[in-house]
Length: 244
Image (cartoon, rainbow, N blue to C red; front, side, top):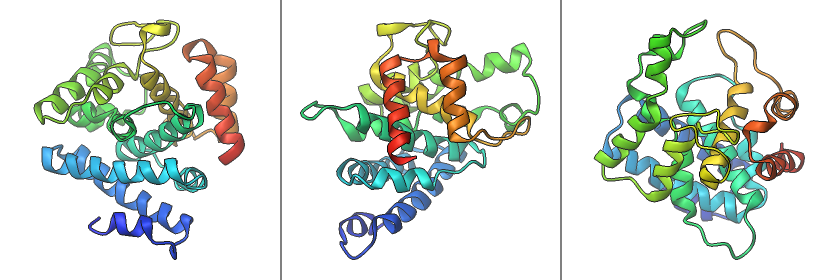
């Protein structure tokens, strides 16, 4: 972590090796953040995410290698990292030259989108079966919980806030917490929701096996297409044609 920036700038280290180091470091920090989210640790995590963002945006081969290291073994911290990687890849794929964005802040939103789940009991998050109404109501609070947590740590940017609050909103209005639809949902949140659902489909769960990338994209296209912005989803498919 101390020499992360130096490693990224070292021309003698391969892109694949840099991606492996980056993935291991960000995954370890994500696990610790979800165990006990504190301001100092979360800031360290965000700093690493910022350096990783520059790596992915500035090296056209970086996203391919980062995708290759995503894990299908489901855990909340693996999910944070996978969604962060897929989200950054889609952001890169759909951003035109000259567009102005605060990329590190957006990336932090992707890599922290589910931080509000830190206080949901593990038996609820890992339940092998349908949630009760009370359990589902508890899970649906995590966007607001995450927003309040980041605000309490004085780490809440506009980009992080909108991603955390809106990543479960859906293009057709079927999402939560506010039932927003279409252009009511921020572009960054739309990107995060696509990455979020894709990772959920491609991760092993207690109640089902992971789908392949192709199967997951096919399911999203055939069974869930009204839930996503069609242009952004097309960009996501294109990203996997290039790098998946």
